[in-house]
Length: 317
Ligand code: NDP
Image (tube, rainbow, N blue to C red):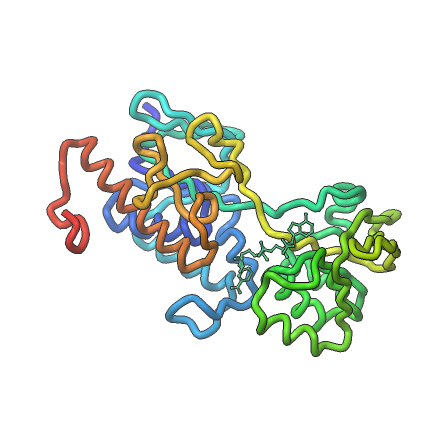
């Protein structure tokens, strides 16, 4: 007979891993589906705002989350989830190769990089076009690159790439940044960084590899071509809700709608972290939401068995 898990968690970023820690400490038979460990957080070169660590790499922090979840008995499967359905009281989770069953699920599969949607972006992916400076930056040592975007992710990428590349252009569609002022100040003092503001990339050119980008200034309408070897697209992230769009309610940004207990509109289905409609996308917040979703799932499972934990949580019986 097919094994039925108490809880299946989809995603192994801060929310999914924290949920795994909380669920397995409640002795729930818990399985986490991971495309990779740590999600976007694993790519942060330096995390300085996770309480308890003055500075730690995102990769190391996420490895610690995973070890902790494993220590309490959480299982992992490295498969991509294609579809989630609910049949009676069971959730059916379909991956490329297999179907899994559980009584409750937590959706914690985060976000994926937003595309620029310009000619050349898809064609040169992996051949000069990249979405993660921490991962792919070292391939561009001593070369010329551009970073597109003006948020924290773009600013951090510029800082890192400027330390290993010959030259870094930062191309941003406005003359103000959404990222933190402290990062903007740092960038303005770096000699091999050139800001290309009020401008958008309209085309990425190349042969085997990227050779240049075409840029248009939105104010002056002037166009120019910048010769370079790589383009890092750091313009935020979007939710890919495809596997669950027939299961739960999503908002206009494709985010899974949850209430303050991480409950979706489907009984037994919870959401946590960047995949949900919560406002702030931070590691500490996602971890907290993951913990909350796991406690809510535990409570749901107790009720399914007509039980109620005598000590559910502080002051919350
Ligand atoms: P943000 O949403 O903060 O920034 C996205 C940037 O890309 C903006 O400058 C935006 O421009 C630009 N942009 C969006 N769409 C397009 C487009 N189609 N074409 C051109 N430019 C576009 O995303 P981030 O990934 O930078 O950050 C996400 C979250 O993660 C934030 O909350 C951030 O603070 C956090 N973060 C925190 C870090 C840390 O704490 N160390 C590190 C990295 C991220 P515009 O402003 O004009 O909309």
